[in-house]
Image (cartoon, rainbow, N blue to C red; front, top):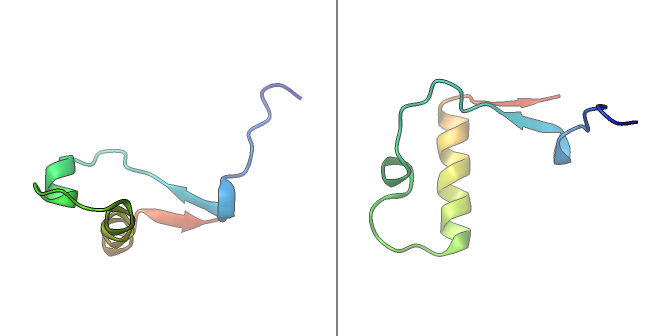
Length: 54
């Protein structure tokens, strides 16, 4: 069973290929809580249509 690719958790696949944004551009320059980081990351992914449910 080696080499068999597992389906991503939750069925989502996210591709950041070709993106030029820095982490500071996505999350800002200040300190943020992990929960806020998750919200900002999903906002970034959804607003740029980077996810695919499959």
